Image (tube, rainbow, N blue to C red; front, top):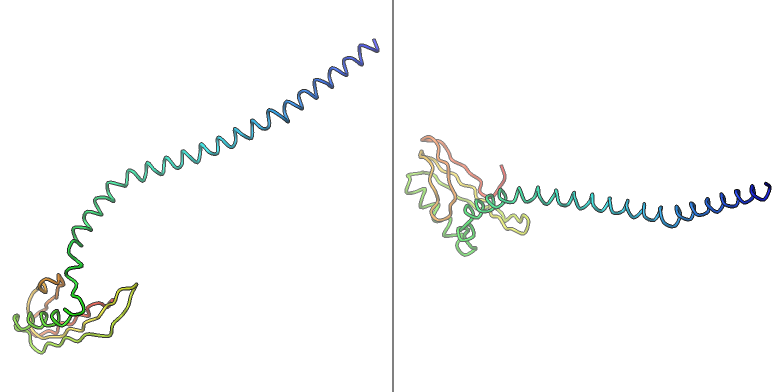
Length: 159
């Protein structure tokens, strides 16, 4: 019986070693690989969900882009170049004269550079009464007030 008992212990130890080898060399690597695959899959699902959400916003962004392009279609051509600045100021003066505005004064300020864009603020003053007018091809507007009130607008400066 003694020989049989030691045989059972040896068989049990061999079985334990086989289970340990199975767990260490096969089960744990596969379990780690499954964890990595699940993590990768979760990341891919988040990327897919984000792409789907972005795709749903795409038509709205396209419409917004079309509206902005329509509004800004000829914006660059409406901005006077440096040589045309005097003509622009002359056009403003002519509009003031055409609308019977008195004591008008148009004074350009010092050049201000903001984000690589040069800006020349204008100080405009006049007396008279009228409604709203557009300054020719410039697309800029002047608000007119009641008779005998002074109109003053700073172009190119934040209020």
